[in-house]
Length: 414
Image 1 (tube, rainbow, N blue to C red):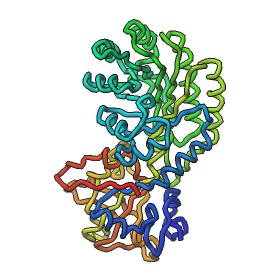
Image 2 (tube, rainbow, N blue to C red):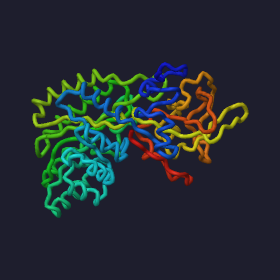
Image 3 (tube, rainbow, N blue to C red):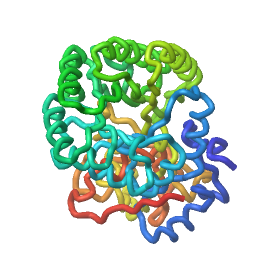
Image 4 (cartoon, rainbow, N blue to C red):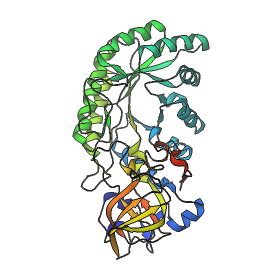
């Protein structure tokens, strides 16, 4: 059976993973066997077939003139980055640490871009020496890159990250519009371009990222159009022709009941129109889509084991060996304004007819360590596996694993 045929409340995420004899299958392996292979709980598992499927799905919709990049901040596990490096056209990094992972994974330096509002001088030096594209976010970075380029005898490859005068409507996290720490305000970009030209840096283009976690195709298309038109206007002040135009991403995944998966078709049509326009307005430019969560989010699960079952004044609590220190987002403490439950199931009892309302909590000594609040799940006992779906992005690396001194989780690609 598939999980979508189960008696439990349905969610689109459940369709990603089949089940066999009551157990979730991840990468074709029964959950209990995978746990034995990993050697511990808690752990994250990422299904490579689902990652490949998502990339193929995007390739079928995106026009040929658009490059697909992976924003590895979503999941920097080296095995995941190495796998995706062979599927996508480039990697976007946000630190020198991520840059090392991308280079070690075999990503081509000419297709790596480096963004972030507080790049240290040592990081800029590493980026110039690695010959990757640096998304300039301040006048200070231009001055630092001029000195580094002179010292190394290599002109830094740069694009200007633009803080646009608009934001991505309906996005879970707004990355542009209004005062922001990210990028250069659009009205200041001509001055930065003049400084780049004076410093003799190798200008290549623009990077615009208006927001993330958006499920509304219309809003994404509007942001892409505005970003493109802004880049065309700014290109008139550029010291060299635009060769790269990174329009960001923002593609969301459906985490919660009632949310609908993003409709890719209108986005593909919109990008095809922009590619056609760019052939005359920015003839040397490649358009880039930078996606993180959308590539890996639905391919991952977080697995923890029930270590205690408690009833407090009529409410059942399943206490796990893992919690918010491994999966901060699922606890609602990673950007949620109103806490909502991720899709959760008892991974070794997915077809059980016996259900109950439970609170799923972790082992930490704080009431914030809540992974599912009064959720209907199969009846679970000590030793059973609780699985959080939609966990392939912003999981282990985005969580305070050192908090309260509990053991770290494991990560596997299967």
